[in-house]
Length: 428
Image 1 (cartoon, rainbow, N blue to C red):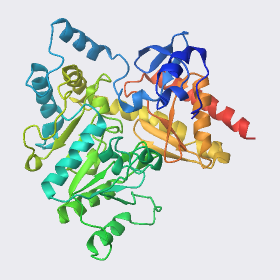
Image 2 (image 1 turned 180 degrees about the vertical axis):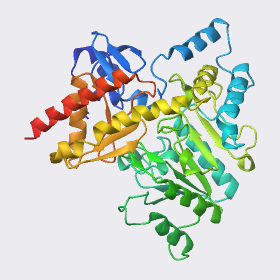
Image 3 (image 1 turned 60 degrees about the horizontal axis):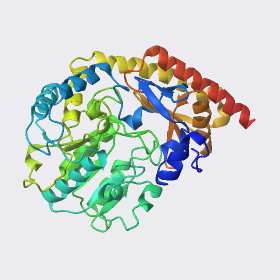
Image 4 (image 1 turned 90 degrees about the vertical axis):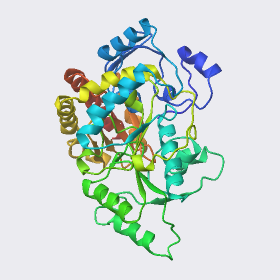
């Protein structure tokens, strides 16, 4: 996407006063004013369909009425908003709801840890406890992984551009090939096993393996059920903890609540953030099996662990998961997206691309990497917000709220189709 200095007059304040680190506003050059479910409006009254959903933080849409109502009621009753990690009614209700709706049906007894309120905080906590429990320092991660922007999370993130922003060497991590990294014919698990079991490989037994079941920022690379199951077995055989980073893919993004639900695995540690807050509110949790919850009180701390507005919103959002109906609705929408994407390679062979992803995070990877960014620019001009992902930003990504109306979804896909036609014409 366009990372040049913004020249639009309505963005003068942001250009003059905000840090150069800003990024998304360089791609979507307008000032947004209001939003409802899967649509946004700018201050000029222009409407946009949202296929971005706050990078996955708005699975239940903008200004979800059910959740908003609970938040307003809570504030009007002078409910606690900030409480560090003290006990509150809001936290108690969330913990009980999460236990009943998410953990019990899976037969799990994970403890719920509230780190700082972002995904990278959840990952940092996971890495620290894994090292504390095992006494080992190395973390095994995967090619094209993305786990956050703080130093520990960056150390297990593959993207070179993000890593260079650290300004120092990132250590105590080792990278292995993700499922399919070398193509369908190469068993990357066998490769990993060989290195871990060979005393001459130079690869130590790690404290933990951290993995995404579907790599969102890494290019919509999806691990197979068999590969994830094999990875769990590999970890158990070698007394390695398995950390599943579900920060972006959790809360239904791929269909079921957890992106790995259909793999039949039970990770030792699970990281959740983004849409766990229900309303786009900052919130994160790190789920720990009881036997590894060996923290000393206050050993991992943070001022904003007690975001009670997040607890209220999250509790209401979990009502979507009390039955299978919501997941089925997501699957219906996923099929609509797939039906459009699967025809792109044959209809536009000049792009030499492929479809990727599942659920309500799907996309198209271009052989010519710059075309994904150009397609996003064209789509935005037509009223559709989409972002790119992948190590070269070569994948255009469809990631709407899970609650998007069918009609709005279809309208967005029509804009995508018009944008593809325009891109194809430009390339002739």
